[in-house]
Amino acid sequence: RWGEDTATVEHFVEEAHVHMTCGSADSTIYYTLDGSTPTDKSLLYNGQEAIDSSYGDSVVKALCVAPDKAPSPVAESKVLEIFQRTSAPSILPKGPGPFVTSVEVTIKGKQGADIRYTTDGSDPADSSTATVYDGPFVLSFDMDVDRKIDHYFAEFQVKAVSASEGKADSVTVSEDFHVIPRVKPVVIEPMSG
Image (cartoon, rainbow, N blue to C red):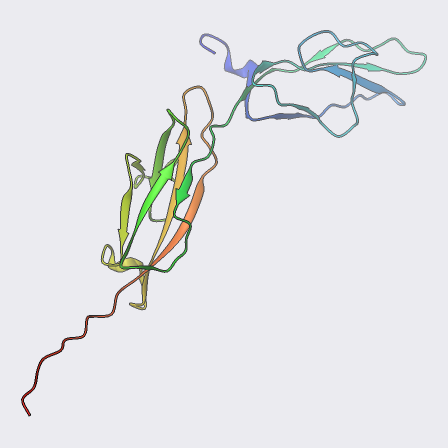
């Protein structure tokens, strides 16, 4: 958040896992995920992890209690800023094929999401070869000699990622495509006999 010391904020995507310990023997930890002060009626910590999956800012507060002892002071986490992930796009058609001479590829995403893709298998989130998707594109056997495997087929790996304002990027999706050449046509010529 603007103007806030970033040392007091931790950023997470979809959920935050919080681990807690108390050094007193036979102790029990109670906690809240909404920033309210915990009591012995709050959520009981199971010793594994507390999970907060509410989007936006959260603060975990915890209290340790033990028999015949006064409760601990309330401990407070940093602000946990949890971002929702953008829905992943889909790549069509499904591969690998084979597809004869070429294949037209369409990438579909949520309305308003920006989609970036690559055809060389690199990560579209940070690749210099990433292209902003603006409509179907064609992968062809004759496109790139380096992609041909023993001159039998061309291999492409399309990867795509969606981004929406205020959300974390989607997971990267991928689809492999094998494009094969067509045999040259038969030439028939009349012969005199």
